Image (tube, rainbow, N blue to C red; front, side):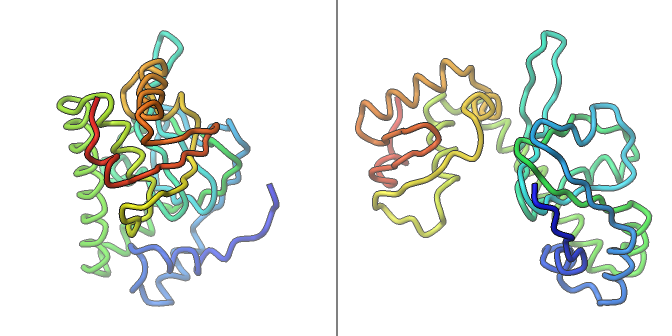
Length: 229
């Protein structure tokens, strides 16, 4: 990984949570923020570690997952650049409920809880934004439970592919890159790797997609949305 010193105040100012924070407060926050560089496969923290702050991904990808006594894992979320995680455990002062591992070489910022609590006490708007971020994360988790409980395997995979498309994709042919391995995608969708491969094969057989490794060509996004197996 190329070691370029990040401009922490600038990075923080680009996050929705901190966009309207006064420069003086942003500088205080940045002064207590630490950067952590991770090589691919390196652990950021383990399940059960104490939590005294939260994290923001600057570059790379961080996998959040539950370990299993059988040696496998359940992927909860893949965190990318400008996304944060760990806020709920920080507020509850609970041990971290998952482990975090770098899927690629990554740069992460650690934001200390004391400064966060100081900003909450000083700025009601900041507090509302923090609550909105937590509510959005909770809403996403509820949607995941609904997806796993009520949607078919094909619907989960199609929904995941659609999520990787830009918002203005229309109905035309589109090329996308899967952000991580098929094994991790399968765990994220609560599927076995074999089931994921079967669905991809069926979508390809139906002429809806063409796959070459992580490269996927969606031949008609509108038709893909309407398809089910």
